[in-house]
Image 1 (cartoon, rainbow, N blue to C red):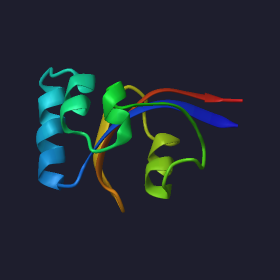
Image 2: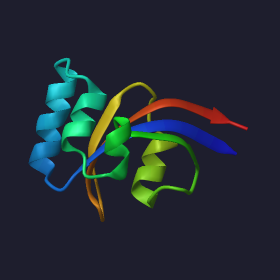
Image 3: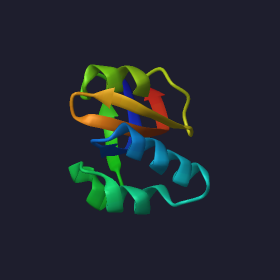
Length: 94
């Protein structure tokens, strides 16, 4: 079974997602940005989704989490909830 440790930021606006990505890439702390801007319940945990299993996330996010490179800031990725910035901290296969 594939699992991953993931954190993310969810916002409604693609332009804001791009601004936040630039801010993080320029050195801003991901968890502080998530707490300030993310509309997801995970914002209070700094965007930490914790350990997720393949199939638990919406399909477009699930596919990215289980195929994209680890330790890179991905996005913005559009889902029915808005625009996501994601970081795959660790992925494992069982």
